Length: 284
Image (tube, rainbow, N blue to C red; front, side, top):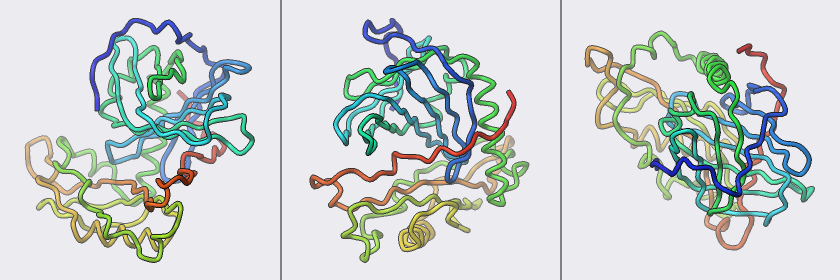
């Protein structure tokens, strides 16, 4: 969800300056853009993680704030100037050392279009300000992130030149591809299921074909999702080239498998914790 917000600075939101450079890292199934801000108790790490060939993305925030072990609330990311605001569900988890907290918020990449020209970013969860930072040199950093993700796409076997012909993406939603009945019976009692990321082709008739797992944690869940996507995958309209001619295209979707037990007093899954690998040297 996206909307406009007052661009005036919040009284409780001092702007943190960067203490390190932008770094591009490869984590799991995609690349990540991250930077450190602030010092001492105010030190944070901010990361932006778009999923290639989709409109999905995540903001990740590591803080020293000691909060409740697990928090679910309404998250907001506001870009300044302009006050463009993206709203979504935010998940927070405190690390075992009790001194750090990871907060994850899902957004749409299309909601982040203004990020390229933004000078500041503010994140709030359930009305509580989590961080406000200055986005120094964000435009070249985003270009480096795209370079990294383009290389990831090529490792999936997708021809970037062919995908570049897409002028208008396929019209439809992956929301109905996987249903509760697709949850593997053997995994229904698991407290925390798994995450699966899929790459699939949308043919010129809008049907989904050639679905494969590009990143998974459990073969049982991975295959259940792949079968469901092939069974129900259908777009209202295929992708179009610049001349308006239907063409085949590729899409991705990330599925977070969760059993009901997760929401019955037990902790949320630890998927918010991402392993930070060594940065990839993409100059910008």
